[in-house]
Image (cartoon, rainbow, N blue to C red):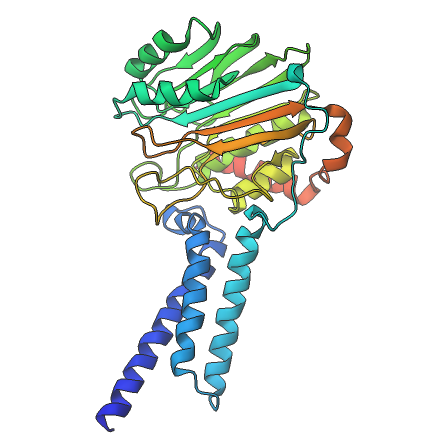
Length: 362
């Protein structure tokens, strides 16, 4: 073989290998197991979409119009790209809105929410406090709060925010909630793991209506945290079923340690019937604040169809590996029917219950 032909063959093998990587990274998350080394590939779908597109473009460099194998390989790459694109498409501004804009936008029906994973080892509490105060929220939830963080936040907010609940822990799963509106029936629950708290209760809006709150921070499927996604998925399913069964308007917020397009969070949405305000508006990636190339939405706010959209923004850096997240929503139950989701199917409910059962044996 001539040197030039040898170089061409080597380049084609390299390009095909690059395409195979894109294909594998597309297929791996479809495997129905809960091990971290599978579930971790749920996260970078935005990056994988661009990687697959790049693989498609560069493969044209040595595409052989006479090769059936090249055509088949190209078709597979196109299918992977379409699959990846459809995963993230709902979270682009080109997609239809899931949560519609507020129609009446009355001030006494507005709830301004701020949430921030502060990063337990982060000591720049003044930046966190200043960022929160910038939005003048009515409800705040902070995660990764140990006793030191709880003390700093209480000293900064307890005067204005009369109502609060906390579960400070040194395992990076502590949580604290502040509200300027009345709270009742607040409980700290350990839904799946006795070291992973969540906060639940009801908030009274200025117009007199009560709202059911669920603040959660389940463990991610990572070897240093949890080798499987079982505990995370079970907690999501428990909250989904509770949200489905309540008659009150519902707000679920916190660091889910999961992306919106994963199988787990999609099932959470289907079972709970809650809406994602990101759909049709953008990704609003809150993690990783320290790495531009590895960013995806981990901090979420899901709400029932009684609410309408007011505003939403990602906060500035506060010394954490997460960006804060802010949103304003309006309680307008009279418009719920216009954005109501189809009820969960029997299959979806069965899958949710199976995820909960798995957590009892894993």
